Structure formats: structure tokens, C-alpha cells
Length: 479
Image (cartoon, rainbow, N blue to C red; front, side):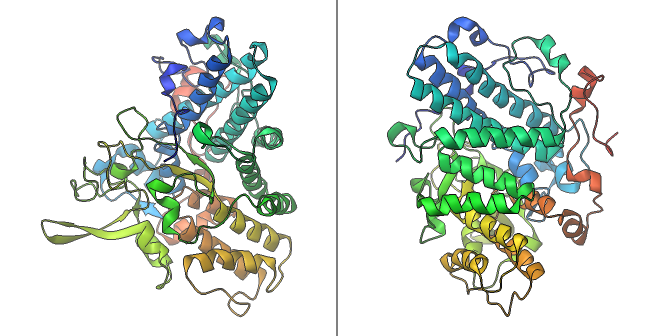
């Protein structure tokens, strides 16, 4: 089993109690004192705190699935008692005072400022230069990931690249154009890929690698429609030979197989009462299932697969039964209630304390990104893009696609979209894929939602506007 020593509690080096408002722009704690960052061990703790932010509710603990899946046609909320904030996102009735909207903003900036603290403080610490360089590269990857989430969720956002220790400093930041944010994301990832190692051993397994930086950079390029750059970067990953498709789709998600050969980067969770366990075992179980699904604690009814998702799989596709269930047995009776089972832990430590990691980037995604980039650059019937698409399908155990079935560039575009939907189901890609390809409005309207163009991004949290109205303005449509 992999070690998770580097995942310390976030509270060790970030604020333990901050007033609402500028939590996102100025984390206040005793450890912000300059005397804390004295040696390599202190810097390790600071880097670990940046990683630990990924577990928070505003990132991969909740917000990323609420947005990446819940706002798409993949999942839904069927019971308002599952939570008003997540129900608003699901129904496209999101208000600027939505709790998830606020937590997403705050927690991402908490993580970004943890990264900035490392970058600003590490030059003055007496430690090995190679380790300094690696730590900076790690947090640049994390900062890029967080800003990539933010710019896709909110559009223009404040671009903060230095440590902030005074609440008053927050009043100086306005929203930077998304183009500037993307430029910084690309720069951070280009810097990181040159320094990060290809892999780790022992206690360091799970940290950001050069492959993770390249993979995220490829996704950024794809989002920017830089087809040649995306194709080139994905080829670098493939040619390196570090990653491979596992023979079995089910093996990807086994708790005993974390950080496997298909994984470029995943958010690390560890059950055991340490505050580091994952909540998905309970979050994704039907709300009225009791312990029939979770074994410990009730279900929250989040992220329930839609009828559309249920029908998206081909009849012979084994990925469906690995990813989702049609219901559960209670008192000897079968209860029809779809739920995600990709993240079930058969032996959780407690409610919301399971051992599942969250996959952020994996090799199948890289193959499908390259297939998409090649097709957008130029459709070649039966070319490499077909081979990449079919490699993913072959591993899944479904029939390969032929030129007869996909005769045009437009048809291949939809084939990749469909394959990404079922291969990467419930991994936070679907909504961002639909927005990226310009398909979100059509797809969601076909599902019965009267979604408007402005709803492709979320509102800026109302608290941010109220605190700093001269600098922070609301997204059009939400005013």
C-alpha cells in the first residue's frame, strides 16, 4: 500500500480561523510569521499544505464534482434535501450567495496562496538547491491546476502571484482577463515540466510529476484550441512510456491500486480518523439508502447518474456496471435508485472517511485528448486518431470504431465526445468538455434545461463584491 505521509492536515500551515471575506486573499495564521520558514522540514510542511487544499470542499472534496458532473447531463440531484446549494447548480438556478460558489472561490485561493508562500519564502531557506527547485515546481503545478479550475468556473479572476499577509492587500486586486490567467497557467506548467521527476518512490508517491504537468498542459492547450500544441504535448507523454492503459478498467479504481500505471495525477485521500479520508462513499449513495450502500453512515444523494447517462453506454460496455449501479438491496428487496459505485470503499473507517483517491488525470484521457487534437487539426480516415480512440475502446472490451461508422471530421468529433463521456464518467470532465467544445447549450437544452450563454460560468461570490465593489464586479447575467 502506498504511503500518505506527505498529506498532512491543512491546518498545520494555513489559517485555523479566518473571518469570512478575505479568507481567499489573505490567510491569517501564526505560521505566516517569517520565523516559521526556517529549514527544509518547514518548507516540506508548506508544500504539503498546498497539496492538502485539494481535499477541501471547495476543490475535490465537493465543488469539482458538483460543477464538473452535477452541471452536466451525467448526474443530477433528485431530492432537494440533498442540499440547496448543490441543487441550484444542478438546476441552473445558481445565485451569487450560493455556498458552493463561495467555498470554491475561497478554498482555491487558500490553495493558491499556500503555493505563493512556498515560492516567495523558499529562496531564503538554507536547503539543497535541487529540492528547492522541485518544491517550487510542485507548487507551480498545483497553482496552475487551481487557476485552471478557477478560470473555467468563473471566467476572469484575480491573478495573485505573491504571498499575501495583510488583509488590506486584498483590496488592491481586481479580476484579470482570462487570457492573462491562461498565460500564467501555461508558464507555470512549462516551468514545472522541466523540473519535476517522471516518478517517485516510497513516501513521495502521489506528488506531481513531469507527466502530470505535461498532461495538464495538454488539457489547457486543448481548451485554448491550440491543436498542434495539444497534439505535441500528448505525444511527449505517450512516447515517454511512463504510463499505460491497465488491462482491466475496474483495476483503475481499486483502493488497493492507487497511483497506478494509468494515473498521471490523483488527489490523495487516506481513511483512519486523521481528517484525510474521502467523503464520496457517502456523498454518492442514495439519500434514503441508509447503510445498504455505504456500510457506515447515510447517503447524501449527490451526483446520481441521469437517465441520459444510463443510456449513454453501449449494451456490451462493461464500464457501465463498474461505474454505476441501478439500485441497492434493503430488507431483501431491490430498490431502484441509480448511484455511482466507482468510488465505493468496501470498508470505510467512518462516515465520510474512506480510502478512495480522486483521479484528476489518467492515461486514457491523454489518448483521447490527442485523438481530438489530431482530428481538429485534420481529419484522416483510419489514421492515428482512430487508433487512439480504439485503444481506449479495446481496453474497455467494446468493438472498435470503423471508417464506415465515423466517415467525417464532425462524426469523429462526436465519437470522441461520446467516448470521453463513458470512459471518464464521474471524474469531473463532462461539463468542462461540453463548454470547451461549444456543446453545452445544445446538450443541456436537449435535457430540458433553459440554459443561457451566461450560465456557462458561475457568478462571482456575492461576499467578494460586497467587500470590494470598486474592484470586483459580477459576471453579466447574474446582476
